[in-house]
Length: 397
Ligand SMILES: *Cc1c(COP(=O)(O)O)cnc(C)c1O
Image (cartoon, rainbow, N blue to C red; front, top):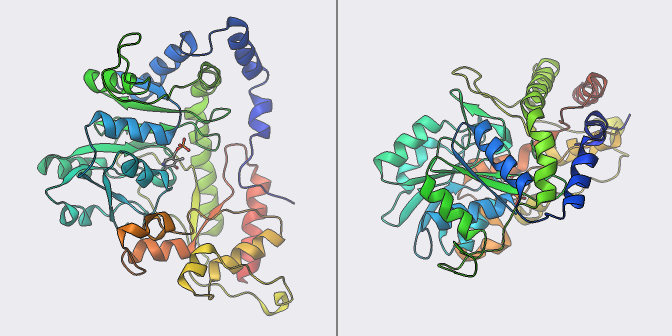
């Protein structure tokens, strides 16, 4: 059996020809930029988050940039975030001229360690940018309290967490601004790039809408330097078909995550994701990420192809990586897994100028050497999951 890490094949057949009808409606209409599809999507997306304003844009990365710009964050400012995330989180902070300040993560839920935020605050700090990594919501009540006490803004990176809730409130409704991505592999994916910002503040919404269209509040009047960052009508039409399914897809992801937990929870050497499901907290499971802490390939497999060292271990000059051996052994059984993320942001070559060295963020660095994402998508079958689990069990016994 071959199990892909992610697949849209079944979803496409379940949506029938709704997507094709929607796309062809846009083509017939000739309205490719703005228009009803975009307006309809923005309104229904805002409603699904439980707030008044949503503005579509070109990507999740642009959503972060628009949010930072709308809050007047720029040169000389610092933004606190985590280094265990997709690169775009920090890249957006740098793109507006500000400095990303990395705080280590909690080894249990992989999210920004709330106990370490206050000691990272300086007179230059303007905002906290928590990442709801893998779909797991950050404790936004505590984070907002820290921000309020210190006069800081909050921008939520919700790129992986569409459909997640903390204490009954959607992510993207807790901070000053929420930033979403509709990259095809996210929980709500378009057929290309797309993104959106969400806010309760009419002024911020207006500012972001203008920034996304060349800082242009009225035709050919430019009041600030902006961007060309719109959500295409074609993407909006696709998202209008998919948004009503998001709740159901997240429910499926939760069932799949629970099934993996039931099938794998007694294996020593494999740490399963821990999160608390009380207080109305709803994990959206964009990824199911395990930690391989103790694994050594069995003797009978020693004729297996030599394990390729991960980029991270190349950088650390360390070739004793159990996780990479484990990943390769699974691949030989047809189970395709992905490493999110092999190199922490603070050790990326692009951030050499920040002056970090190995050991500065020990939990983040440890996780980058241990994590592995098992196949998860709403349409994965029970048989596929059982096969994945059996292959994992066989490797440990
Ligand atoms: C995907 C992602 C982004 C960027 O979204 P794009 O739409 O690809 O630009 C930002 N942050 C996180 C955590 C992501 O996973």
